[in-house]
Length: 490
Image 1 (cartoon, rainbow, N blue to C red):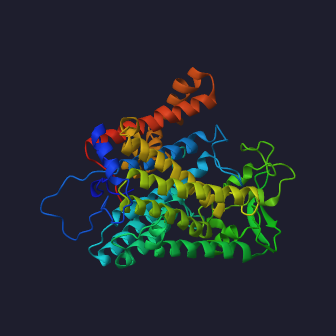
Image 2 (cartoon, helix red, strand yellow; image 1 turned 60 degrees about the vertical axis):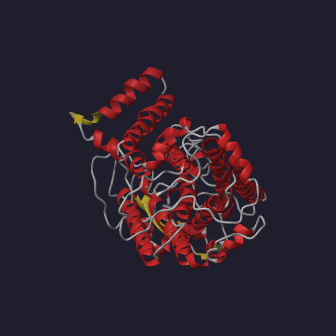
Image 3 (tube, rainbow, N blue to C red; image 1 turned 180 degrees about the vertical axis):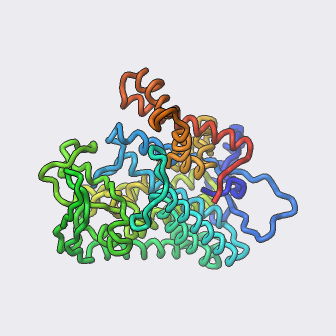
């Protein structure tokens, strides 16, 4: 969620003629060694006397907008279409791409925003402040204080507050990756040595940071002893009961006894974890799998247990996603030619995808979003690299910008759409104006009479409602706000 007025576009103007692009490609097919200031965030203590109009990186905004759109789609339509909802455990669905796509684009934005750092101390203070803002909004929106959109009440019992969430994970990754980028600013090269791998060696400290996160995650996951543990939950008769999960093992990658869950239970306390984990949709837990449903009579005790999908250990692994993203940003800065950029991006994406497929299908490390496994990091980062490269080709090379304008608009106001749409704050506000009873509100009336009744299907109606009443609506709002130069920044 970078400041739209503080990023300069160095990729592609809104329109170019064919001769300009041809000349540029001929000039840039050579190997480039000198760095080019593509996009930067001006970090200054005093504003310039004359404020120049800043331009945006179109691909960056479109990719961020796509991620927000996917989040709204899977969050609000995933209940009707379980195949796009989060995978109950191993595997990867459409919803499982959202978080790593966010972290990937955060990494790209960091590289562009911190291209030049006139004053390190000021940059560090700015990163810390933005991190604190992300943590505040994350706890406020997903900690239990907000009950939007369905429940008009607000407030949370501090004994049950959830400390982790989407924005909290983004805050951690942003803080670590940006801090490494800042403190190593004097170690950056002004030019790259010849060779395909020179971009990696030039930013070795960023990769060392990612490797440290990888080692911490892998060593902890496979060596930490997980003892038996207990929790309190409601049984089928809605009475509180104490359940015990038998573990006593190391290196387990299943739902019950993995180190990721154990670390969160020890760090935060079991009462502060997410109490509706997706593993409750597994076949072992319900006959309705992959949909939600009542628990089986013989369901294991852990089916009712809480689990934090954005926990501490898994967020350490998520740092790697941000590290890969910042690498793509470095490529954008140092390579001028479209072909050279795409070659770097696509080749790395393919390597990541191959590694992920091998790890998953050999059962060495299954792709798992809840654990944020290394194969999941590679698979989703590889997919992000392919999509980012495709967007760059379509928007910034071929100039096909108009079809993706709605994504750009949403990407420019990503925080606004995340809060109002993905977190249901706007729908909750509308629901607050009801007639006689809370269920008789405008949102429910539109869903029932405009979508469900017309299409004679709740599933189809839900999907169309999300597409038109949420995604399209917020695309239009974002477009208007962009026209007015109004953005919600952190």
